[in-house]
Length: 308
Length: 251
Image 1 (cartoon, rainbow over the protein chains, first blue to last red):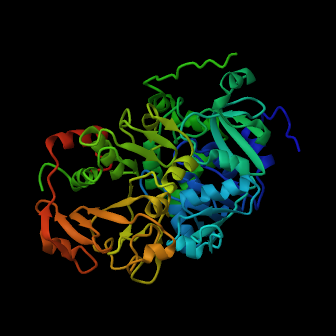
Image 2: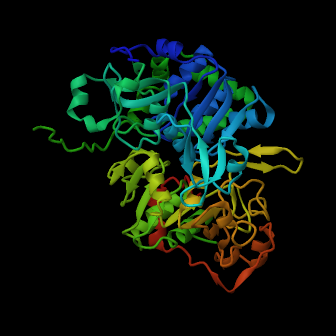
Image 3: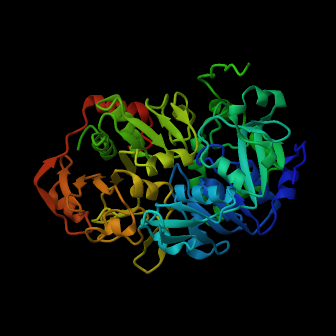
């Protein structure tokens, strides 16, 4: 089943077409970097839910979507704020069922990666040793211990995870969705391969010839991709190598603003619902703040010879 | 205590656990600084793995907050995916891993999932991240935590990252074929686990045994030759402050 060739869309159109109520959505697959905040905010703006979210270390993207009342289940290794610890919306949802009850299927970073890898391969399970001995292995029904028929060792059968949609943010892609990434990518590749649909946001849409000049850099091929949206600063406040670094102050401010539920709603109104889209968000951040996050110590790679 | 913070002596004590040439699975926060410090002092040949997919043998090129920050990727030896660094861990190639947490018990089990409140309610914590993977799969585990009675508890409310378990052989029964906690570094001292249970090995300068006992939720026992943790040297403090210039982690 082929996907369309020219996949360039606006982000609001792509989210509206690809993310549906009841979906499971993989996001923040690269851990602290490349977090698809622009896509997450567009889902909040369009009010699409309830959703199951799949992530390793999600940072505050999941916390924001939980606060918006759009999440009924989380399959993840960590939900919080990497700069400060606690995700307050997550805590309120688990402890008090506010704004709606939340089911959590706890994983480790390795086990959720393996679950997606199995999904990508069309297999029902992966095999792991971690997190044997932990409460996760006892409580999450996606883990079942078994005895290896070859070695006799006790191991974990980790149920495969196949999300409906993966949201990924990358440095550059062509209009067919061939995505190039440089930097640590977490389980971006496994999330894209395991998901039925892939929504790509990128800093720049480039000519296909740019992709072909360095095909080793292509992490996710276009054959997996459904939509490509050019969204500069689409991962802010997360870092994107070669474009901008972490905006730590934003995470600190978010922690302070979300400790109280009424203030958390005000945060969402100010930074998501009250803005028409990512351009308005970037304008709100302002030029001086953006300038301070941009590359100040250039370190380009050496060109490679791919000729014959 | 004068001239340095408890965070700084924790970083210094943690750095001394890294031997030259070790392959270290580096956590966040204080362990990140401990790795930077060890690299700049006694362990120039240590190699650091970061779970987002970074292998590097030099300190980050500028101060960082998280492993994903641009200066932690510039100058790396390899940038890859989580699957690859976790496979190195699972394959037995990681000598040492660091984790923190909300609670630790006398057997070195660490909880970062949920804590019970006195009224019976629960506090939901962020979860494992890579902590359980490091605790299950690294050859040696180092735990770093503030020393408070609510954190050093007799038995954790939930095992996120398995330690030695409540009896000898517990790890093997779980299917864990290597590893286990080697040391617990707190804001008051350093514990080791000679028989699978935490024994106080050193107290930081100026800390009394009574003070440590009061801040420990289990019956504190110490090794016969209880030592005083060496103070950070001026050089060590200079390096820590270079990597944490705003005292974001060590204040």
